[in-house]
Image (tube, rainbow, N blue to C red; front, side, top):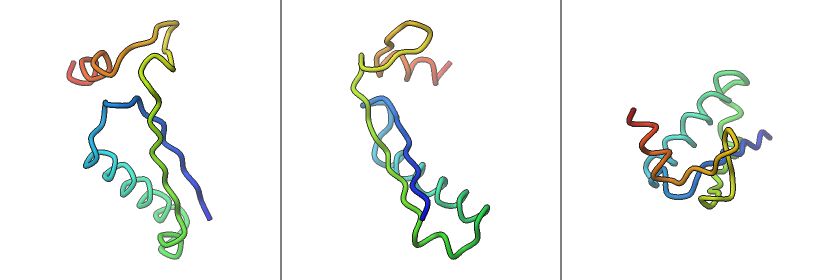
Length: 71
């Protein structure tokens, strides 16, 4: 049984976006392993508090990440 963890910064993605991540990752596993994997593929979206992770030595906030995504 596959277990996939996705870690995101708290407050960046809404519930609809997280549900879409779960759906698409499940579909990717099914594409690789076959339809029989759909019912046993677990996908968890874990939120990490802002300031509890970093990139390039910096600790961007949820707003910083949202701004990066919009270009």
